[in-house]
Image 1 (cartoon, one colour):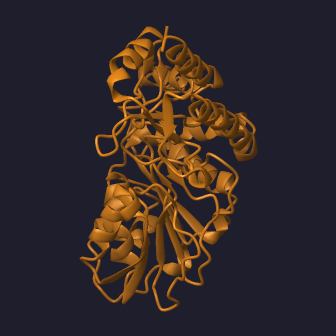
Image 2 (cartoon, one colour; image 1 turned 180 degrees about the vertical axis):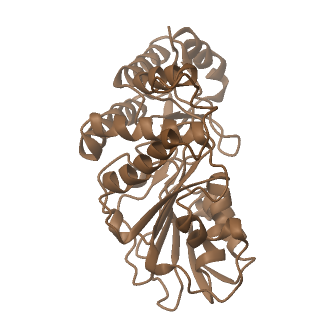
Image 3 (cartoon, rainbow, N blue to C red; image 1 turned 45 degrees about the vertical axis):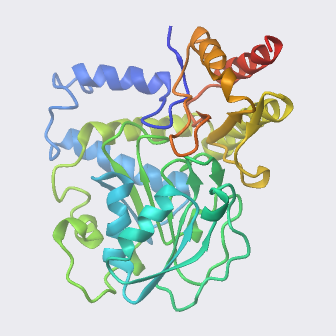
Length: 353
């Protein structure tokens, strides 16, 4: 029996994805070869990456003015790849957590970066509102969901400059107007599949405007020209990405997933708020639908709560070391049943006092 996996990433995948991926490791589409040993130039893999790139744009509702890429290095490499390609004079950043802060620090190596708002002083418990974005910035960068602190943008900031977003932990989790973004990037290990690949969706008209010379591996235009095959891509991770994207469609797309994720989040947050032994970390209006962060009102009861979680086969619920407490990551593939089990554990925790 599988455990209830609340890991923040690498995270849970749907059983259908595991089944198809495991079969492909042995024999990919009847080829007699494993998906991890076929050439990335083979017609079999070309069908995979072309379909994955097209399907990502389709799910996002983006047209030909955008390009989808699968690249190496995770979101952390995008922290520097974005300014390499887009930062000419100044970029604006909103600091809502550890990863947003790291993105800004990387960009500062390339030019002026203006942190126009930050929730750091309050422990990153909220998303800044009513932010004025400088119109002379080359772009505004945000992190749409903050895994460590459990906050998420429910309303995008108003901006007249291109909006760039790290969406690693909430991409394709709900309906969203993706056309409001000039560039989106996401590490695949949370809502997109196995670790090892990074999805980038970029509006092509934004590229080619900086005057600096770009290293080949940092040049979006070069990767576009080579259809994400400039170097050997993460073939297995991209195949799993494709399976996840197909699974998203099979669930009814972003509208259906958004409703399901809202149901899971409401169920868990309602219990945390009701239970006198637990307290939520983030401000209620900015709570994440993907990462539910909470603490115990009495830290001396931690051992007892941990034991109940273990008995219930709950895994990956420990909070990040910078916040402590607990973090239940309830990504797309996590079934409602797992959330119900955690809610029952919280109620039992209260009953036993």
